[in-house]
Length: 258
Image 1 (cartoon, helix red, strand yellow):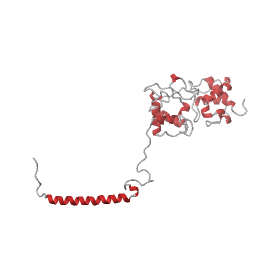
Image 2 (cartoon, rainbow, N blue to C red):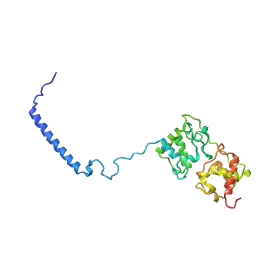
Image 3 (cartoon, rainbow, N blue to C red):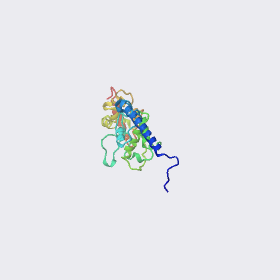
Image 4 (cartoon, one colour):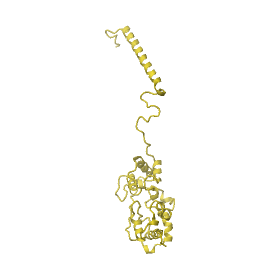
């Protein structure tokens, strides 16, 4: 049923009110238009003036696999001036090595899916394992969250979903046959295993070996145990005779040594 006019409803009175409302609305629009014209560059009052900073917080770039790759190869991410790639390869072992360097750390091609890292001391994710390296060897405090997620994404792109953990095979000091070390053989080993940090001739950022006073045995022990930011070289990375050759060459860099 269609309802009739309400009691007391006056169409003429309503028309008068409508015209008053229209006139009032027109006046408001006029004021707003004048305010708009008078404002600098026609900007709204709630917008920042030209040259002003952003009205809200600046959004950071989201994590990406590409950003993780850049972090992995960047030697300036920490005070130590070494990159993840200096200690770890991240390439398919079945395709063979991409260079002849001997890295202290294992290949990270399956690191994402290992489930645990650092002999079971880290079980969160490979990003937390990277934090250990960052603090211990690269000299940083904490990886930025976006960079950490990006790094995990990059490692995931090179890994299967599930893989087996890799044990850190520590070798006790004193096992290398020091008396059989050969500096000539150790020279090329030094380039491959130590040059990225110590530089040619032992004068790089990793420590001035030319000014060292350590004995061949002490050098060999440091190679096996690590020292400060220097990583240890495990038993499956360097054999005992290679450690002896490296120690002989590093010792020969000291002044007055043959």
